[in-house]
Image (tube, rainbow, N blue to C red; front, side, top):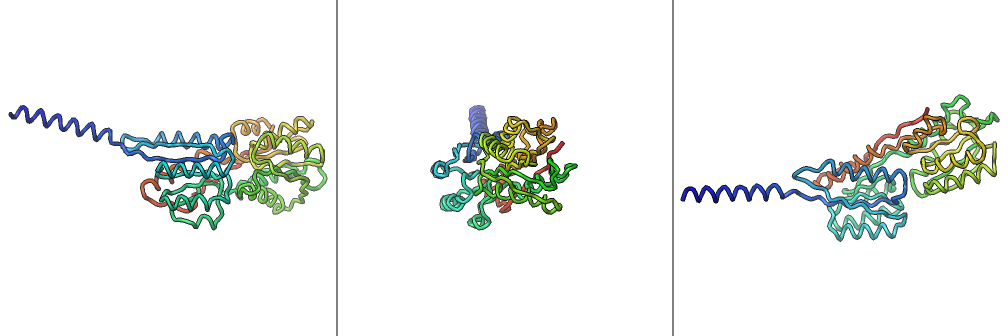
Length: 318
């Protein structure tokens, strides 16, 4: 009888062990990226996925669903609705339109699902809508200032044609986006605060796209030619396009024209090293993606986050 009891007890213990071993908690995370074919956000979302995977343990698994907003706010709103219907524990949202943050927050608040906003900063007012939302990003004013400081640090302070002023072309991202606004404003502010006379020749939106950067730079070069000293681009994707246009126009970067971007894509960093790009600014996708994941996990645990979680930019110049 004792033997039978011992066998039963052993079997029960094995069953309990197997049950316990298989009882890992699953945290469901919904991630919506404004557009998958954006160079920088491709690196960002890949690192989100990798970092979540690296944090899994026997006790906690992360079920991460990442979807493409396709640059369409209506599409992204539907994705948020789907995440809510699926009962995700937390959402990470890279807004198609920063001005739609209030709509997303309202839906999330009604469902009781915290939100980590990334990369595209909602307005200060929208960030007061709930105590379970936060923003992870870098201060775009810093990135614009760094672009300007890269130009100021040049021996001729950006006056490539020597006419006593810096005449520039500005290729913007989406003007509604606060990053585009600040990079545009603060890059030039860094020049004027250094006592440099500036002249805006051309400013148009390129919507962060390489093809548009090439098209706009080509138009500016055809219109203003050797008057252009510097082409500022709000991101590296557009700067890559602008570089193509500069080469096609027979100009040479760092010889008779300067070119700066933001993001520090690997390809652009190599170009800076080789003298084919004047400079860029590191938009730290690893630091930001890790901070976003860490914030999402804290929310999933029922903990709180600071409303703003900042990750610094860094200058990249030869």
